[in-house]
Length: 472
Image 1: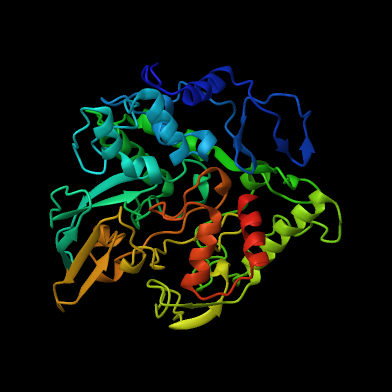
Image 2: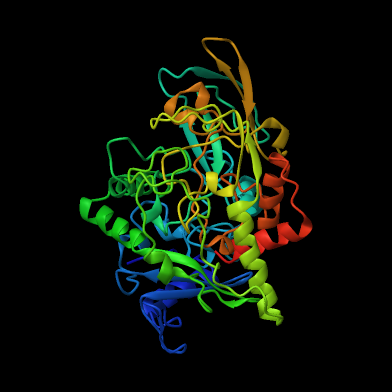
């Protein structure tokens, strides 16, 4: 089995060795009982991140490097693992991508110009040209997604302001997006940022199998589709993974003193589509509980030691996430929307973070609900992003966006700029944030929400929220 080519960087080779050896990490905390801290468990992988330790639990048993997830099944040297690496929260981060570029001189399989470069088939004949061609992958950790405007769409692309001069066709768009983590997938309600792999009649398992095949024939440029056995093995591997922060450098163990951080508790977290939904789409009929996160509620907020203070900050951040009043308005897909339950959401109302991050102790939407929170508005455009001008074919109205989002799949004018909310567990390992990597840090992500919704966080509240998010 070839897991990468000879240009793979040292850090990746080390990760492969970890999988092959499987005696790599401390034991998982299972069923409330701690194994010996020095006892390796082949079903657990522990990696370091900027704030502590990330832990991945494979509920199917030990990590198997012969799984097709790690195999080169295409023609350009890529595997699923090329863009989904465990030490980066099962995605990729710019700092490690930059390291891979330096060590391979830009020849690592991730640097392929079918979708890794800013423009398709960019000139990558020299080191300098490769550095320019892959600048967005190097700085934001994004992959280019090229999609044509769907037949019968309610809009057309009128013009493109393209900083890379790719030719800017008006029949399609190049969109630059972060690879989503290939872990915690049992909590998904839609596959991909724009939900393009999901349909109303298929299951998440079917959608993930289709996504694996599309990634193999697209990103890896395979000449053959996956066999049903290969797709099934990839999906079984991915859906068996549960990843969460297990240790915080300041607060210590995140599953201690009554807390339920880490992947063991996460793997037992109940989930079904619609769980804790705030607009009446919960099939169980139970009311929405804004206290969607309860991981650290048991922590004592009265201690005076250094770790106590760090734990207090995390616990306060969890409370803020659950309870801080936010005036929610101007969110396409939510405000003014009438849902199948018959609930109509006002054009402006007071809610909190968990209105949109409602899945208990996970943080994504529990139903397919792509939203436009303003991330692609022209006012937030940076010089390294294209700007598309779309025109409504019926009304002549125009709108500008850096990424049309869900509209490139549905063809609907109302879906411009809409994206799903991602799962929030394991955040500390996988900066930058949002679909386009526009928030370099969690501090930046909190600042975005603060300014977008005029929340008025104090400095202490921002610090507590970041501490909480890093502990997920």
